[in-house]
Amino acid sequence: MTAEYNRLIRYMIKHVDGYLPPVDWKPSKLMKKIIIPIEKFPQAPFMGVIIGPRGVNHKRLQDTTGCKIFIRGRDIGDKWQTDEEAAMPQHVHIEGETEAAQPDFGISGRWGRDFCLCSRKMPCRLAVVGAGPLVGSTHCDSPLAFCQPSRQELVCICQRRADDTHLADSLGVPLYTDAKEMARQEELDGVIIAVPTHMHLAIAKACVEGARLAKRPSGLRAFLIEKPICQDLASATELLSLTDKAGITVLVGHQRRHSRLVQKARELVTDRHFGPLRGVNMEFSLLKPDSYFCKEDPALEWRRKKGIGGPILINTIHDLDLMRYITGHEIVSVFATISSAARGEEVEDSGAVAVTFDHGAVGTLFFTDAAPSPWSYEFTTGENKKYPPVPGAATRDCYHFAGAQRSLGFPSLQSFGYGDTERGWDAPLIVEGASAGA
Ligand SMILES: NC(=O)c1ccc[n+]([C@@H]2O[C@H](COP(=O)([O-])OP(=O)(O)OC[C@H]3O[C@@H](n4cnc5c(N)ncnc54)[C@H](O)[C@@H]3O)[C@@H](O)[C@H]2O)c1
Image (cartoon, rainbow, N blue to C red; front, side, top):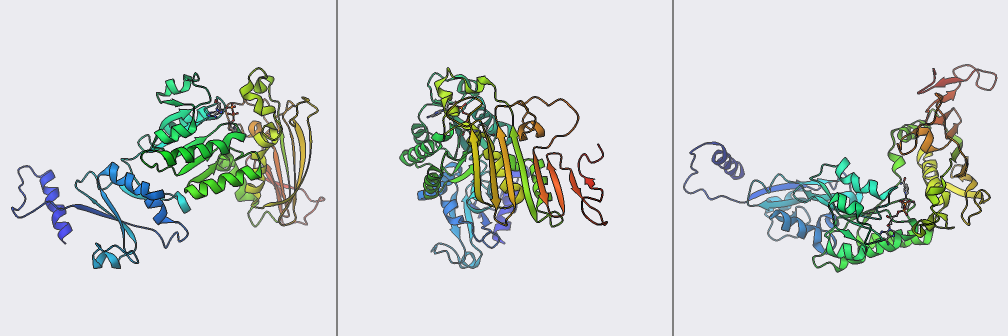
């Protein structure tokens, strides 16, 4: 009641010319309560996320907005909360002096640690470490291209060499050459790590350490790390233990999972009218130009180094990820043979992989980066405009999924099965899907 009375007076002051509030009226603090959706997401560690490591998120929100922020409600030991508040579900209580401070907050996110209490006054501060021409420079554009600029900003980039100023200059952001120093100086919310794979762990460590040493403790809480997460299992495990301790969420750059074609294929292959899955056949065949290996540039040597570069770690990691993602099954055993006969480098250029899935189905992946061919995700989907279109009208598939009831080609999304007649090779196959009539 009092709150409504105050709201009306504030409204009149603002909108009615010459209006004077009652003489005994004193402007009271503005309040907002945001219920924490604990019941809907019982696993999400809301308290930790709202408060942040050593209270940094809470402190930054208060400093930037000028509001006082409390967590109150049932089972919260806040001696200042009223009985009414103590009986409410757990909520964030926000008190501000002005109208402007108020409607600005929300709890956003989707699951687990992704939740955060945020204010539009506080854009998410991002940095890119490793802004190479192939992938890192694209990440530099993405905060500007895909998000509302007021919600995200590219604060700085970090490169290996101090004279590599071109991108930083064109984007008008500071350039660092030391990720630890960068994280110490800038108050970062997230870092995109796009350095060569074998350096992902070292850069992640440097960012965590730098954020820890910052004068004002930083709220670093997210890494987008390019795929593969690391070059081997031990480094990946170490990295995840480090980020877990530091309260940092990690997203690995398997962007193909978000493709419309992949989403549709997953829907079809996991449908009850498809399976059980009998097997999968995948191919990644294309020709990498000599310039990709650029032997004169020692910085690109990693692409030819065994256990660091090569098509298994750089390319087929995507195909193997989709093998699991589209089928919804885990791989339980792997047999592989590789060859470096095409280029004679220490790293493989071709190979064949055979896998068994957890329910007994099998899969194969043939790959080579040394043959002119259209049979790869890159060339058949045409999603990445870096690759020129393949001539010829026919849609080509790079993956085949075989289920007990149907089979599916990808990316054509053409499926094959039998109708109500007796099923088997004497009956005509019925073709359905995107280009069935072609
Ligand atoms: N998601 C995808 O589709 C995709 C595509 C290509 C590459 N990648 C991955 O991206 C990563 C980078 O690959 P790339 O081909 O762009 O590499 P690259 O060698 O072309 O570029 C790496 C960049 O990192 C910088 N760098 C190196 N050491 C650094 C350091 N210590 N501090 C700061 N910057 C440093 C270099 O200056 C360079 O700009 C790899 O993990 C790769 O697997 C992902």
